[in-house]
Image (cartoon, rainbow, N blue to C red; front, side):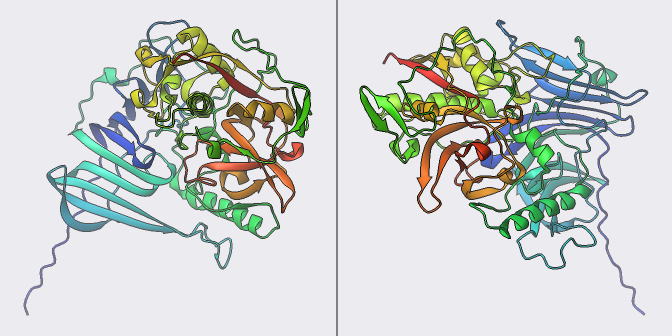
Length: 548
């Protein structure tokens, strides 16, 4: 009988010892980061470096478990950025190595293609996650919890190996454990090796500090989580059940699944907030001046306009009046405070120029704040610390102190989602300068409304689990209270409105979680003190001087 030969294509060996240089990108957020990784699984050592050691982490578990993390910052009052070393994890990582490249055993082999003019092998993995574990939480999932993920891995065949060229992820980031999105890892240089220089993994030649408090916020976009993918389904199931349960009740706001559905609430707070100013009430800032108002009603009904008692308008929205820039995305970095600061300042500059309708909208750089506005004290976890968090109040004070109120343009200093070396030369916009800032009285709706009459205001808010999935309506979550100790996020307040049907007043908030969240990036929060998320408790109003 004839012989039948079956050709089985061997799966490439999974990489275990290598060095590579490449770029990790989040295209929809317009963010990319240069990355180098030295990975020695057999020796239990690894180094992950961003932008030529501007930020890097070292694992060395050869004898005793050692971990070091270094970030670069401009010290308060300094002229040049310097590195700062921590002995314990500060980037959300765990005390174990981060394996980068996948095991291709269960991946489908696709037709060869070309990447960067190179003929490459193409492997694809399609997965469907129904948002439930076994046994299923619900027998019938009718609330849209199923999600399909696709990963495409491109490599050049090299014996029993396949040299990586690109990895595209449409879905949950299986490399670093991030939320659902589109990610691209491009490999520009790759070496398979087993003769690593031991100095690569040694303790940095720095005074490495062991931080005694819990740092919540991430210092770069990618290495914030090594949690096992086995928890992804249970997290999604919990979040989908929260959304479904909310749908079953009568409510003034709606929830829906979004890119955060795979993220636990604890991780969400760590990655997408960043307000550090819970104890700022009695802090003395050199450039904070009293907020001067006429006689007004703290409940926000009226104010004195000269000798005339004038009612506040029922609706007031700077999005309609003009001057508001598009919603941007802070990504996985605790930099909300920089976005709130920039949004308030840039909008007020644009309002000053509203007489020139042909002048393009001014946009201020958040990355310049991340890199150049820093406080040295790490003793209590507060202060201004790039992706580790900060606050608009201290930021405005330092802009005046360090840069004489001059401002950086977004076009000259784009956002990359992690702390970098400060480029002080871009703080050069002086047509309008920041001269001081003010704060409204706590719990005074009237003062906050009066402040809004001249432009948007940076405010601090609490974030609840339901806010993560907000999709419309007036947000009046009973868990979103008026407690200053629960403020974790800073945003820009751009107006207020009134719903005639519900007979309820609300604040209009511009967030920094991209325009794919909420209502085109906005949320409407009830002004009812019991459920206002603390909007009136910690505010920052930029005071500007126009010269041209």
